[in-house]
Amino acid sequence: MPSSLIRRGVWAIGLAVLVITLAVAALPLIASTRIVRDRIAWELSAWSGFRVTIDGSPRIEVWPKFRAILSDVTLSQWTETDAPPVVEADRVEVDLSAMAALQGNVAFSTARLVRPTIRVQRMASGFYLPPLPTGGRITRSIDTARGVVTANPQKPDLGKLPSDPFGTVEFRDGRVVTSVDGKDAEVLSSLNGQVNWEAMNSEASLTATGIWRGESVQLDFSSTKPLVLFAGGAAPVTLSFKAAPATFSFDGTASITDNAYLDGQAKFAAPSLRRVLEWSQAGIAPGAAIGAVSIASKVNASAGRAKFENTTVTLNNNPGMGALDFSFAEGSPVIAGTLAFDTLDLRSFLSAFTPVAPTGEAGPGDIDTSFADRINLDLRLSAAHATVGPVQLADVAATAQVKNGLAVFDISDASAFNGNIQSSLRFDRKPEGTQVEMRLLASDVDTGAFATAAGMTRLVPVGTGTVSIILKGPGKAWNSILENADGSFSATFGPGTLNGLDLPAFLKRNQQGGFFALDDVANGSLPIDGAEIKASISKGVARLDKAEINSQKYKIWLSGIASYVGRGLALSGGVVPNGQPAQQPQANGQAASPAPAPPSQSLFFVGGNWSAPFISPIAPGVSGQ
Image 1 (cartoon, rainbow, N blue to C red):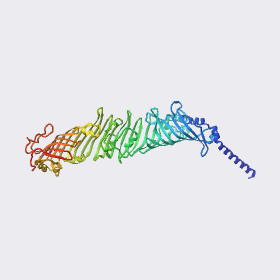
Image 2: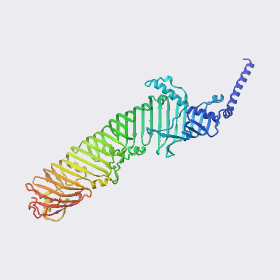
Image 3: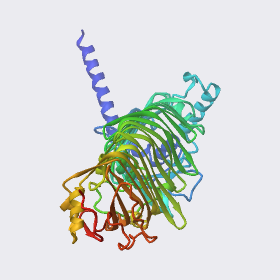
Image 4: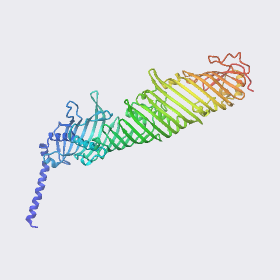
């Protein structure tokens, strides 16, 4: 190659390098003169649809990337000049195109909002969203896409969607506020994340973290057809929400029009349902914490109603299956459905929806029934095995209902103590105060096991029997229900034994006279043919209307009162040989005067308390032989 040609090539390369060097060096000067503040504000306004103002002078950086740094930036609605800005940012960093800048244009692909404040409004749906822009390329693209969707809602022509560029929007150390009584109230703080949306007709994703109600949260959202979604069509959506109290995810199809709907798979998990309800500020204060809760279901939701099909529910590692229906009536959530469990802790489950006394609570407290005004509940439950405290149940069929100040939980059928159990717990809010009603019917049960579970281990006939308890009274506090309740108690027992009573020793001590403790004659048992007890209950005191125990030789009767709150006893009774009528108590419930008592009848008085009763003879009786 001739040397002159080489020299000309070297000069050409050197000139090109010089031009490029001068152009790069001149970029800050060009930017400061041609890419002025108003030009950047105009371009941002055309892009976002909001009125953008920049109070500070833009600063241009060339290295490591060409960008403009803007200070004191606000985005406001064009039509509401007196309203506060939708977005305020201390600083906005915009990555610019160097070639476009040399041509006097503004083109950017990334915008970073540093310490932004985003104002949102509560929508009719209950969600908080910022006001929508009334113009701009984004709004025009959505309007165009809406026409495409309207032309063919089932299968819109994606080739006709606008392809305007969007880019990436990042936000750092931001917060979300809403107006409460004319002042900004913080909804979300420490907001960080970004929106990635290369072009309007491409897929988009959102990742954000922040602090909501004192807990760190993370939100991830993506859609392969976001423009179709914003235009009112149905589009694939993936949503994930993570926080310490709960996690939620959805994968399916969604629409956000007036007839919005969801159709897909949803999952929810929480270490404590109580913590979730408290954190969400739902106004429901459960009395006891349910452990880990998880739900996986096929969801179909629309128009304020959601159906959960093929639902798997796990409570405290106890899995169940069923279907649920969620809706809203007069602003209150309505939950209805059926759930079937293999095992279930009924007390723990109910404490989330009814004011059941907290498990392990040191002492009884006031009953909170305000939850009954905030939720409507109608659940049908079944469980192969269930527990209520120490009581083991099998083949349980139950219902839980809460509505308009009324909360009812019924066990319509269950197997326990080798028999059948039916029970009901009812809380009814009335103007004069909450009324509580408790019912229990135990049919053909093992009375010994039943009494042990109820905490009654003394002088209970062991065999097969039926027990009925009805209590009703004011329910201001748990310790006042039993003290003020009225109702009835009845029990019938078949053949069995009366443990804890040596009847010959009892009759001998009673004949000898003088006080003696029942424990002194407790080392024995009495075979019985049957027994019957009937009592009326008033203000925590049971008055025995009838109490008879029949054995082969004797009949034992009791009359008087027993306090099941203070556990005090004031009873009179007698042991009568079979075939001889027992002495009847007077109308006031006390035994008749011992003077006319037949000489073969052994009469006595029972005092003290349930745990340590004592016997006082009130008439000489038979020898017990």
